[in-house]
Length: 488
Image 1 (cartoon, rainbow, N blue to C red):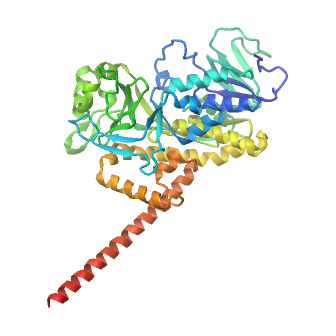
Image 2 (image 1 turned 180 degrees about the vertical axis):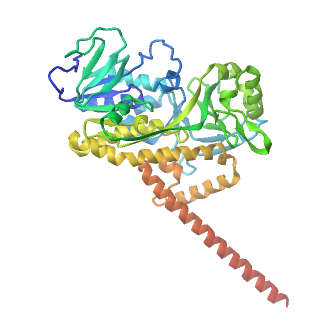
Image 3 (image 1 turned 90 degrees about the vertical axis):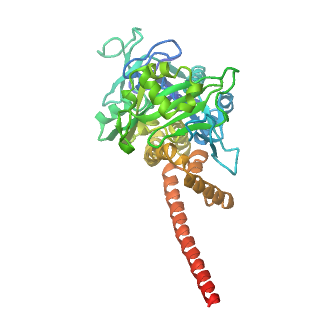
């Protein structure tokens, strides 16, 4: 494959993608299909070989984070664009709703909440991050105009637009001018930062122009466990085509099905011990140190699940406790030379299942912008960055808000009644009334417009409630008055 190293100025038609995770592979494939020469750089070694991440790399790697992913409409549209949707769905497990475990005594879920009661074709899919990433990478490596470079971390981008990478492979590369051996330089037409919440492309942008940036850690983190297949080789939880939730008020556990009949269970809870109601405390994930601590925590909060989790103590102590981070940056670009997408631009907490989907939609929308401007990157890239940023901020806001719904409201009868009312309105007026979850998950309405539309719908519901309450009170007063008059 031809290298795009420089020596004679900018290499025409070459795009550098930093980050070989899901977003990086998706945007690389979309651009390569357009005929661009694409070089994709990943700071980690090839994860398909056996290597161990340690320390900060455990939560900073875009690849090895093992929370299962929920694939929905936005992500499927991007996969469809590159011709891989059908292939991905072959190893995905459909989830048609939420299975709610409110009792601590019975493993079977006590309630099922369909994602769309009136259109059962609408479902989301549980997919393994690494298997999906491997498929995208394999397809990329088959393309003659794509070069993938592992163990190449971005060091910086200079004022001339030259990207400087360190070379961790030990290979001696030719360099130009007086740059040290073991480094690699390239001056592409465009640099795309798809390198996650700890993006080095974003760090380079902060040095090159005035850029507003914030990174926020919420007080909760996550711990991943496994619910293996049962003794007969089947799913251990009834209704495997569901996202299982154990809502516990201020925290929760969820479980997503896998093709091998196991479930990936994830506890989302405070990282550190904090006061709770009735003078008790919710022990933090970081404060659970011993097998006895694990047993007490799990038997107190999730006793119904323990019989299906034979290795929960070992897994709890061995698996990392990972933080949850949110990122906001403005602008997403430097003219038409550098641009961010995915977590590098708008990392979010995972509670709407839209991290991958919104990142894939970023890639797809960039591709659509290139179409709109007939391949002119000088117009397409700034338009993408400016028009997509509000949606990135919106989905981060929606994701954080949905945590309260999942851990608390899903066990509420009033919440279920509200969802049934919204579903009925959607059935009666499908073009005018779309529930929030359906807008986010089963449409491509921009996320910022989703929030505006939901606010309008919520105002209508509130006004209708008070009008209905007033009318009901009037009827009661009229009936009482008639009854009193008739008794005189």
